[in-house]
Length: 282
Ligand code: HPA
Image (cartoon, rainbow, N blue to C red; front, side, top):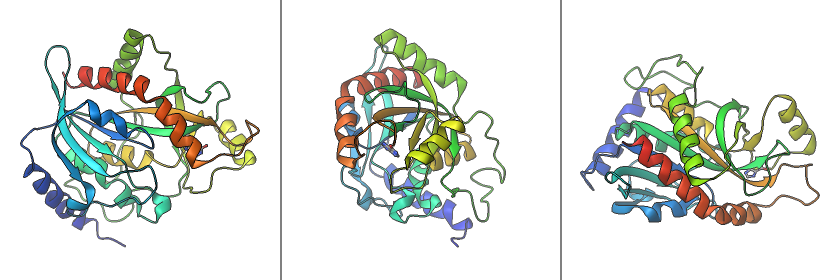
């Protein structure tokens, strides 16, 4: 087992290295999921750092998940907002530990962001959430079987038993709803269930998730949210529904389809993320 005491040291190396690339201090952070990386093009980048250059940063090998940390300014009314964006993330199904999976989120939090936005591509468990829908994550079910806080707790980062009664911050949720209203986008809210993957779910598993109260299903995000809450950073989440979950439509699921539908939501999601970040970074 990794010794938790090593985590702060590993984190401080990564942070020192990133701070050596730019002195821009980000106010808000965003993690861009499968097919959603294009948002970073909206930033006036001060630094775009391939993950492999950052000491200790875990690297993804999944197609469609490029890995770069972009620090830059988001043009906004009333002044540019300093943002740090992760283009791509690693997943537990690649064999990374939950601690590694959450490392990127810890880096964003360690850079001093006041809010973290997590995004992902998800299957629609709620039949009302059709492919292309953007859904605000209101809560989650951690059914992955793992947790990034397992092991010795590093008290410098956060408490042994962090409260999770408001995993997604109500104030940030209201900012997403305001931004959606202003843009004329319908953005309903839903509960995200995180499974380990990498196989997609069976129809019986989707019926189980529905009975448990899930609206969305995916294989990411939750470890990052747990780590951010551990560090006391407020979180907001958005899913792009890329497919009806297994058993709710007749055709089989594919990673290719997930990427394609996420890409189709690019402009709507980009507009929403921009409007949210400019509010949250004020
Ligand atoms: N299941 C799990 N993860 C996913 C799905 C799905 O249907 N769609 C996109 N990511």
